Image (cartoon, rainbow, N blue to C red; front, side, top):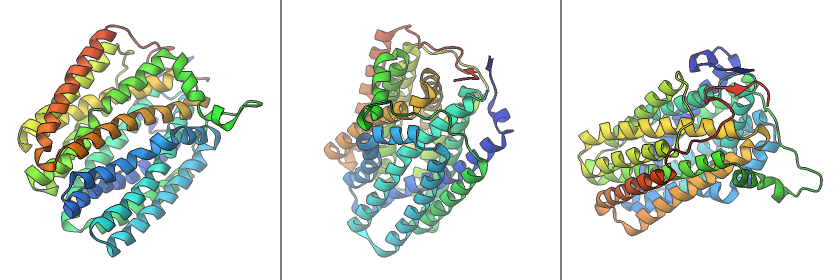
Length: 419
């Protein structure tokens, strides 16, 4: 028996409405943090390496502990993990508030980077647990694509609100208030998850004689055997060759060429707004499993819009970033839905963690290369060259894959009511 639902019908479920409302608040706070930290780094150090430091520490945990975090997400009850991780991150940002009050210069950047590192470790586990909850909800008859679209919509509303408000808040109130707001938002999110009573779904169990290491890397074996899931992970990693150019590039462009934190907020908001529109549309429309040519064609469009952002002025950059956000998020919903559809619930945490590892590896490679080799003054030129190369790469890779289509058990928007 299969069933399909829209994003709006999902919100009739009290658990879903409560949890994703709390998640929205915490992600708004996190979005303000993400714009505040790189802006502080470039303002205090005047160096792209300072910005890269704050970004890289958020990527390293997924690379180092990804399989372990995925294993924890598949073994440990997911609601308890989500509540504990939310409250733990609230404490972390309270500590960050004290750091900003006490330190300046590189010492503040390094201390806050340490906070970002620990927070990213928690987020790696949290993200895998959240995907497990979505898979569990899908087995109750909720549409998998609708759940993915709701998750993306929440993220994009938070980005749009948090990034725009973050730019204004930094100028008007200072970074310390931003951190305090973020801490409070995670307390609210944790309480919402507690009240919601989320399902944990099918948890993984170690087989007789199976080592902890073998259990942790079981997702890798699954990817090796599952062509569709493997192609989704590759495509997500390809998309994450492009997105870091936006994440690293916008703070530098705002500082060196646009000369305003407000424009950083507007540019980031334009990208998030495009993503919001895409996630809303994909939540109401059933999508077929895509071909590799479609997937990589979309990646090339995103890269082309990043190229336009790098070579034009800030007024043209805004619509280009909107298009980049729209296409990347529409593709993101489709890829996440396909990944969850192709993987059983007891393995979803570990497979998702491996996907995150691949994403963070490609993102870290781009950020490290660009920050070390390119000065802030020449960054827009390097950003344009990198985006142009990625357009060609995506077109060639997609052309080779051609019309090969991801294989699913059924329509993307539908999911079996039993796992």
